Length: 114
Length: 114
Image (cartoon, rainbow over all chains, first blue to last red):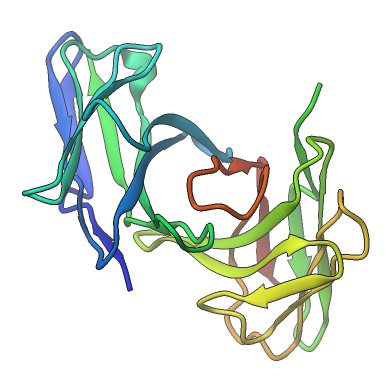
């Protein structure tokens, strides 16, 4: 069985400030890790993923996440946020070697303020 | 444009009524999924299908039914047995059922009870 914990349900931050959204997972097998973003009343869009190789992965819009196996974490960071980053962010995990069952965290609402 | 189309965007159900949510994809993906999203609970898997004419129950299948008669279509029926159907329903697809494959999401259907 696998699980994902996103401890922060809401994160308010001022524009141009840095932000970190925390994600911890639990799994008995090797994992693949994903961050998805959801804008109001829309579906989810993939932000970035870790499958293998370099533990630091980046998205095209300035977000990055680092896979830390010893701490079972996959925190999402951005050095300078923009108003348009306001959205809900979901961390998800799937178990390598098994079927494609994604387990999602409960989500973190990022609110960027002027 | 390739993508996943969910319809309708909004749906209202009367007590005792079955309703069907449509999900169509033109990505030529083998695997399709249905999730339910409730505030503060993240996404929970209802049903998934890795190939035509085959599907499996997810974590919360009770009160729901699906069919997969065509590769591009995966309709979800919310039956009268589902006592708390009010939620945002998301359909997704992936190239295959392997754990490392990205899931792509539709824009969702919001179901409410009259």
